[in-house]
Length: 405
Ligand code: ADP
Ligand code: ASP
Ligand code: MG
Image 1: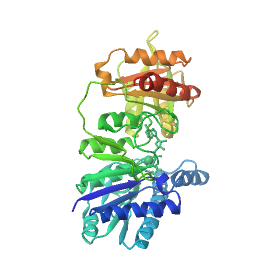
Image 2 (image 1 turned 90 degrees about the horizontal axis):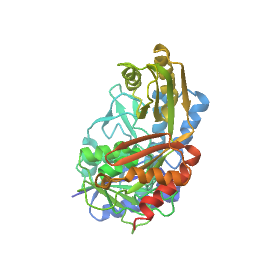
Image 3 (image 1 turned 180 degrees about the horizontal axis):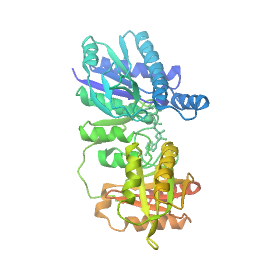
Image 4 (image 1 turned 90 degrees about the vertical axis):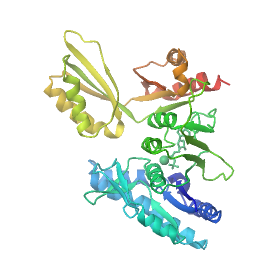
């Protein structure tokens, strides 16, 4: 019998009626002849609310305790969904992440999965039960509960699908699938029928929160095909995500915006070998992801270095930068949260020259100034002022998607 893994996001479980609806979908899948493993997120905005609660008690948010707290959100969903499934006459077995055998490293709040021991999941499936696993959590080698980074239930689902060799992993959410831009912000956005891991990975890591980027990375590495589908539209076919050949065609397939970016600038540091290494090694040791980096042209052997980090890591990154900057004799260190990142993504970009120029012209047309630029083979990102984000997103979408019938 084939196994299907289904993941339901927080927005699909935000009240009891939705939980009952989801339970019916799960039971229908089992009745079609599949073994079903379900991965759930916390109800609605539970995770945000728990973070805010913790901030009121201890603003420094001790990470080990935060993980313990956040893991409770997913447990509520597991218990309620199992109860709902049982009212439909099926047996359900609910698991916290550690019971499902999800072992991680010790980096609290963004732990990485090191291995999965799916023995217990398989045992329960063999007893004809529906298994419901709490997403977003695992257990470290120190036996502490860890979480897998925001949006991490996607990763739980993909990783379990890989470990138990599921036929398919279905990610159910509150939109019809993956669109050319966030459909809640750009009403002209179009549903994408199929997309490659690489493109979705770039989308996810540039702010399209429809999938967690680590989950896509994992799916690509272990070749887990998955589909992003609407929970509440049973006819919706969603977006199929898989390895795809590069085809001739449109240059840009999607546009994204990331408003959780912050910039740090270290002014006037010596322009000599080893300085950049010192700054970024210090950040790397603390597991802080640096996104864009620019260094201006050196004047009299001194240079300014700017880089961006996720806003959640800003305080930590700023403190570290101050320490290293002072050691290097920097004149000043500043942080800026008034920015966002607009990105265009498309494998077709490789074969189409002039894409960057078109993006910059589109931004110029609506008077948007570009502060930083970075490119990869299939992506171009620009940092702009936060207040310009919305119009930049819409204009770039118009230029590359709407005008490209
Ligand atoms: P879930 O609770 O199911 O995990 P999320 O809120 O994490 O759902 O992700 C779904 C949301 O992602 C959508 O409501 C949508 O606003 C947003 N989103 C951003 N970019 C895109 C995109 N390109 N396509 C689809 N949804 C997107
Ligand atoms: N509940 C967690 C979050 O809000 C995990 C998830 O939704 O995937 O980030
Ligand atoms: Mg999500």
